[in-house]
Length: 349
Ligand code: 2P0
Image (cartoon, rainbow, N blue to C red):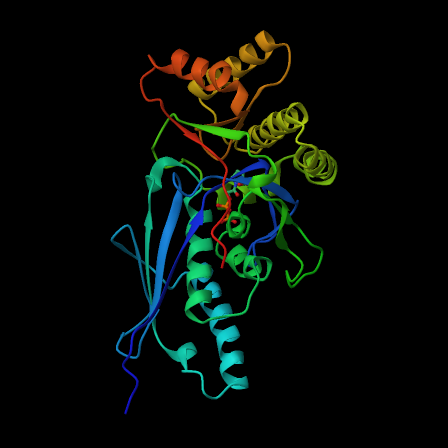
């Protein structure tokens, strides 16, 4: 009798915020970057994608539902993830004939974010990481987070870093096939339990220039870009890994802020220029400077991605001096919403 069973597995993946930024592809098809990057994974209680993957001979075709809305699965990125995961499952099935032939069945993916997708908070990173992990669980693949990061990277570059919790490096690699462009753990979240992040949502509008096209124009036109990729980021990678290992917040904060500034300077140096920061973002930068000046050292660090929203890192002992002051100062400003987040471990496979 034909197998009409529905096979199913669920998982969650967290949002990550880069402290050394990915910006530039040397291979747009495989999402191979022009520089390595490092991120901090945020708590899944606050920001995460939950995904259920199922497959069955009763499904007509591959489908993907995000926050109850049907998404196109024919895009090259989704197709690359499906193809890679099916190939791994097919290899398992070839070596063990008692396994059900899931690799040839249509897939149904259902994803929900517990944060607004349009809020500019790295939704593609959590989304593709959850998609890849859910299908890997469905297929019972004996794959490590690093092995799955190679696949998630093809969905969205930053997604490869969301396969881990804590502090994660995406090593750019040097091979043309991308086999060494992978995410690795720098330290688990438990290594630095006092780390906190405050998310300041300035605008929940969708960003003007998408990361994918923005970074392509930067690579083609920015004169600062090459120096950033070859000199600035490699030095920041070394300094950031050391700061995390030593739990040295002053160094962590300085590299985080300089990296954000370097990334946005490169955006401004793109032609035509890309503006992600707005006046409210700049007010947040000034406020963090004031807080650090008042403390006589770096106790708060801002970072901005491809949009105006700020993430402020600080240590628990400075909650009042950082999160308290920022919330007080920005409370009267329209359009600001803040959430305090504790970096946490990612759910393991
Ligand atoms: C990052 N960003 O490292 C940087 C900082 C935005 C600014 O990764 O084209 O959505 O899907 O590989 O991963 C945003 O880029 O781009 C990003 P694709 P992605 O987090």
